[in-house]
Length: 180
Figure 1 (tube, rainbow, N blue to C red):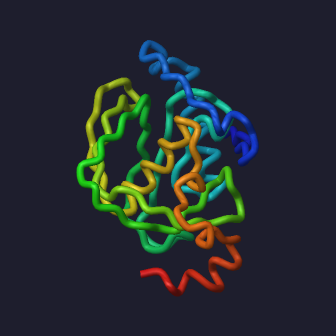
Figure 2 (cartoon, rainbow, N blue to C red):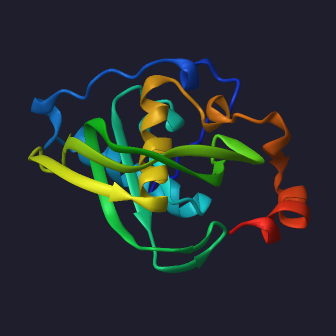
């Protein structure tokens, strides 16, 4: 079990586009170690998604794992542990919905972000097989949030109203009860 350091906002790697992960390297010990380190780090931090650039690995790899039930993000639908290599997102419907997002690389803050709620993702899985999945609702938001890290973006870049950026304690005190 290796827990890696999650780099924080201000680190230049978080504002740099990651390189595609070489397909030929997907079934290598390096790749399996990267995925296990990311999963260990995600669990230790109590998150639901992590992109390789957040641990200063500048490759297009992200993981998502959402357990069913209550979390710091509310009651969520489960998403089994998933590995996304070189993902590409297609928006299926332009309808957006906003959620209060947080980020392991932006600790202590929450911000309200509107994102498309129906997307399709084309990617390689942990075995290097081409996959296509559709996501909707909060899961679509999580996927887009993680994939933003692969192109050097943070959720705060999408906040339309700066008044909707809050420290966690103030979010819980003033905004949590106002969520729908």
